[in-house]
Amino acid sequence: MFDLDKWQEIFSTIEKNKLRTFLTGFSVAWGIFMLIILQGSGIGLQNGVSNEFRSSATNAIWMWNGQTSKAHAGMKPGRNIQMTNEDYEYIAQTVKGVELISSRYQIWSGNTVSYKNEYGSFSIRGIHPDYATVEKLTVTEGRFINEKDQIETRKSVIISTMVKEALFKNGESALDKYVQVNGIPFKVVGVFADDDGRDDNMQLVYVPIGTAQKVFGAGRNVQGIVVTVGDASPEEAGLIEDEIKSKLAARHHFDVTDERAMFFWNSVEEFQKFKKLFASISMFIWVIGIGTIIAGVVGVSNIMMIVVKDRTKEIGIRKALGATPGSIIGLIMQEAILITGFAGYIGLVLGVGLLELISKSIDTPFFKQPEVNIQIAVGATLLLVVAGALAGFIPARRAASIKPIEALRDE
Image (cartoon, rainbow, N blue to C red; front, side):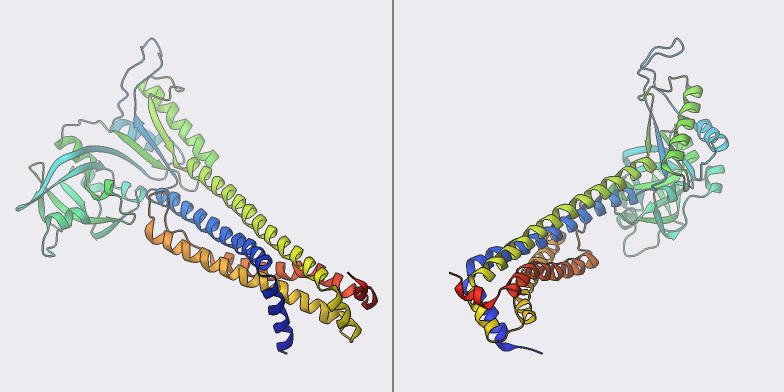
């Protein structure tokens, strides 16, 4: 039942101690504010880094050509290592655990792609059909490069939505049309989009790697190879990487310990490292945030101790007039819960508001969409209510235990 007199008394006490109440409430509000900001920023950082991994398969092992830095089998350092189609076929046939595989040959920017009177400068990338899955490309029209394109070295091309918009005006369909790629006609078999909007993918066209090698004079050379390893653990992925490195070292006659001869990037291991890093960051954030809240709650407990001491005579009179220990405890705890609950709510609102502002104004590759987990927000609010009750309970018990005669003698 609502007791107006009790609430009037609580607000009267708060008004008499404005500065002390403000400082205590501020410490609680600051604690919940920092918890929300730290949690939201942690999620924003995690979203940014996860987005970088979402741009390609997280179970991939990449390898690129390099240059030897160690002498090996009588050969001097400084030799260029050049992978070929035979390396692609050898890995596909002999390495267990490989799920998807594609080699890559790229002709960088400066290439002219045209359709009728429209022109654009885009990169050309020769790949195998599995590459679409590795790079997580979405075909919006038509199809991706297939095995038949590769075997027959067809002049097929799949273009990005950006290339389509540049070359095909007024909503004209690009499918089955012929575009000129450096003056050579290629048939558009599909249009793709990159959900992450990466410029390096959107400003290029894909062709079968065999066609790229034949048309642009690459012979059988490839610039890199990528494989995926299914659901292999980081340890298993490491063993697959070591096996590939060992076999390529034997084929190209370089020291397997020479890290410059070929460059490897194991996304399975890297993704696992980031997961562990973010788990540690999350734990650190919780420790700091909860520690700050606890400091504020201790402040509430201390101020309630002082309130009890300042009101000793008043409490003694109340008890002499028949006030029960429960009513004394209830009065003190209500005041404590009011201060912590209100201050915590203010901190929560300010924290969420600032995160919304940051989310709209900051969007970088490694920091995206900082947000508050609703469960965390609700949990933090409940924590404050419980903490406020606990903060007021100890001084409330002390107040309830005061004998009227002792309270009246208090100076």
